[in-house]
Image: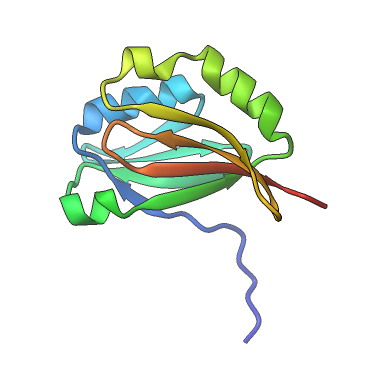
Length: 121
């Protein structure tokens, strides 16, 4: 089966929808409100749906991988935002090196774990 896909957009939940909306805007994503309980956040043609829905087991096990072209540059810009000082529960984990590439991590206000990575060529 061949796919002619143009994007993939995961749905993620939020413990506090308004707080998460502010967090993602501060992180640098653009928001398009789709209704009172859902928004689409995007950057550079990639995005995800944030919904006003929280199921602890679901959110605690949600991970999203964001591939970037230069994880060091991304980490420096991300760190400069000082998101943990603005949002309770937000954590940044510095870059780690692996056989396949390198990545850093962001835990959002609800506990969603973001992997921000760069693959070695």
